[in-house]
Length: 306
Image (tube, rainbow, N blue to C red; front, side, top):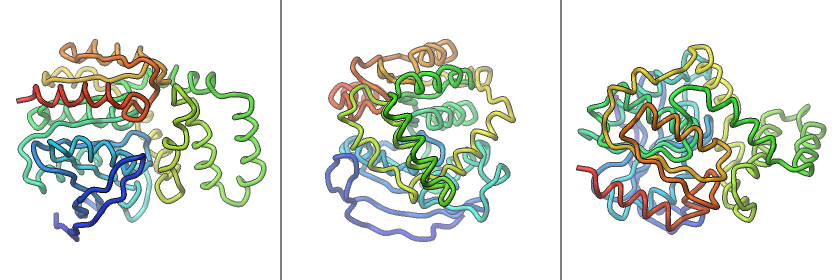
C-alpha cells in the first residue's frame, strides 16, 4: 500500500459550505486506487457516502463543519467518483473488498480507532458491517438516514419513493427515457435519478442543493447496480454479527425520510445501545433541511465519546 499523491488545496465546498483547506490524497490498495480527503484536526471521523456509485464529495460541507473540532476523512469508495478499479464487476466491487479498503485506509493513516458516520442505505450498511467486522477499531458510529442491518428496508423504501413522486415527476422520467435512453443510457439514468430525489426531501425548495453534486462524473449507475446485485446474491444480513459491537451509536432519522422510521427501529433492535433521534420536517439530508438540530445532535454525541 503506497500513497500515490498528497496535495494541499483550497476546496470550494459544495452544498452551501465554506472555502476550507483540505488534504487530497490517493492510496493504492488491492487492485484499486482510493481517492480521499482530510478536513480539520482532532479525533478522526470517517464519513461514508450513502448512494452506491455516488461520490462522497457531497459530504464535504459536513466534513468542514465537523472539521472544526475533528479530523474528518471522506473517501470515494472503489469504482466511485475519483476512486478507480481496472474493471467494474462483482469480483472487484463488493462489500468485502470495500471493507478491506476502509481498514487499509485506517492503517495507512495510522489511526488506532475512529468514529464512523454512514449516510443513507450504502453508507449505513458499510458502517455497520465495518463495526461488526472490526469492533475494536470503531470508537462509535453515527447512522444518518441509514439502511438497515439487513435488506428488509428496501421493501418499503422504493415504494415510499414512488408514492412521493408527482405525476409531473413521472412525466419527466418518461420523457428522459424517450429522448436520451437510446443514445446515452448512463446519462439518462443520472437525470432520472436526479428527478427521484424529490422524494428524498421534506421540502422541495432544497432540491437544487441536493441534486447539485449528482453528475455523470460523480455518479455511476453501473457501480450502483453491481453493489446491489452483490448484496442480494449474498442475502446480506448483519444482525448476528452486529452483536459483537457494543460501542456508542447515534441514529439520526428525518421524519419524512423515505427510508422510513421502521429502519431506525430495526437498527435499535440489534444495536440496543443505540440512541435514535427523529428530526421533524426533515427528509434524507438533515444537515441541509435541519442543519442546527443535526449538528447539535452529532457534536454532542462526538463530545461524549472517549
